[in-house]
Structure formats: structure tokens, C-alpha cells
Length: 364
Image 1 (cartoon, one colour):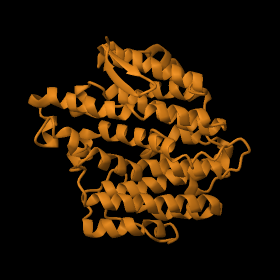
Image 2 (spheres, rainbow, N blue to C red; image 1 turned 180 degrees about the vertical axis):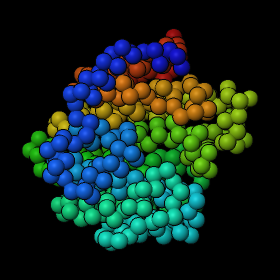
Image 3 (cartoon, rainbow, N blue to C red; image 1 turned 60 degrees about the vertical axis):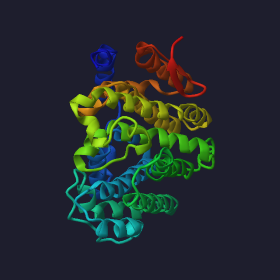
């Protein structure tokens, strides 16, 4: 998609240089000097295994930053167990059901993974050690979400992704719960201006569904190569007898049509996402969620009508991510950025996006 790749490059390059020179992309020297070796290792793993979220997490402050770092590594470890297709179900399912207990076992580790993120399992004692150093209020949130997410993942290991309802339920387990936990971590800081928004299930559900569905759409090829299938049969069966057939060059037209139908499904969640963001009052929490949602909206826009999804990994540019981090500081900016992507991608193809309904239709 040369049109997309050419958009905003000079500004993105400038912002990327500014970010590297003046913004926090890692711990300061003073913080490094006062940080334990095990915590430094955790931040190293964060940069290696959670590259999209690492810069946003590093922009947080102090105790909360450490808690969120450990939170993401624990969830990455659970996700690595689920993703590793070399682990038998006889081993994997009990491991997922028991994973939250490993947080309190100083020596537990798993050394048989072949996954690209296996270091978080092989050196899990380092992560669990830092987990047990966190205040109890953070530990409770992390352990609770870890248990619920892992049990949900185990459920779908033996249940094929048949319907859109299945898709929503799976995404709830692996992403909505993560969003709820993250909101609870922010609320646990007890800052006066942080509203307790995690109780608004519908809005947080849309936040998590938006993120995970975008992930699943983007990762089609990687999942196929690893033997995983997360696209719902209810949609892809309209276009192919087998999900894997969509990657064949002769099927590129129906493949892109299937892709676009899934992208359109994801857009329905955007009104709730915007409403959720508008309720956040703490600036750090707003920045975290706003940048995350916009990064994934940019990814979704890059995937839309893009046959490259079936040929290679599709990602947004680093300059795009940095520009979003710098600009997405208030609701007015978030809406402006979102409309920019809508105009550049969807409307450019003769489509019109209804922000209120979260739908795409042909322009009249």
C-alpha cells in the first residue's frame, strides 16, 4: 500500500528523532541505578516481547509503571503457553488452569517451549519474584486476571472458532479481561481524579474487543504458519472452503473481501471506545488507552483492503507510533487523528464511515 506508506513520512521521521533524543524510551540512569537486576531484566523482556506497548508503559511513572510492566509480562507468559503449538494439550490445559498459582512459586519455570517469546517462561522466576514485591493491591489484580484469562484460553483450545459470538467470547477472555485489569491497576493508585470505570462492562468490553480483533486480523498469516486459527468460520466460510486457502494467490479477491468484512465488524466498537476515553480523567491513564486504541486503529486501517495481510506481517511504522504518542493527549486530538485515518484510508476508497454507528458504507 504505497499510498499509506507515503503519508506523513517527514513529520514521522522528525517526531521519531525528537522522541529518541528527548522522550523516555527506557529507564533513566538514576532509575537504573536504584532498580534491581531482576526488575531490569523484566524491562528488557518487556521491550523484547511487548514492543507495541513497551514505549507507552515506560511513559508511566514509578510504582505504577513497574506494576504494569509485570502485568504485561505475566499475560505474555500465559499467551505464550496458549500460542505454542508444540506443547501438547495434555500439558497445556492443566498449565493454563494452574498458571496463577505459579506467581507464588519461586522456582516455577517452563523450559520446553519453542515459542519466540519463550524467555518469559524459561525465566519466569525473575518475573514472579518482581510480582511478589509489588503491593498486595496490584498482586490481587494481576493474579485474578491471570486466572480468568488462562481458563478462558484453555476453553477455546478444544473449541473451534465457529461463530461471531465465539469470536467475541474468545476476545473477551484474552483482551477484555486484560483491559479491565489494566483499569483496575490505574484505579489502585488511588489518585483522586481517577474514576472507577472498570465497572462499565459494556465500554471496556468494546475497548478489549477492538484491540484483540485487530490483532487477530493482522496476524492471519503468522497464525496460519503456526497452525492456529482465530478467524470465525461464520465469516470466512462465505469466501473459502478452508481458512488456509485464503492465503493462496488465486484466492486473493475473496480473501480481501473476507478481510474487509472482519474489519467492518471491528469498527462497530469504536463509538464505545471513544465514550470510554472521554470518561478518563487521569492523564496517564488517558494517554495509555488513547495511544493503544489509536495504534490499533492505524493497524486496522493499514489492513483494510490490503492483500499484503495474506503475504507478510503488516505493521504500522515506528514513526506513526511515536507521532500518536506525542499527539494523542486529549479527546479532541484523538477524534482528529481517527478522522484523519478514516479520510485517508476508508473514504479514499469511496467509502464513508459513520462514527456514531461505527459502520462503513458506500458513499452516495
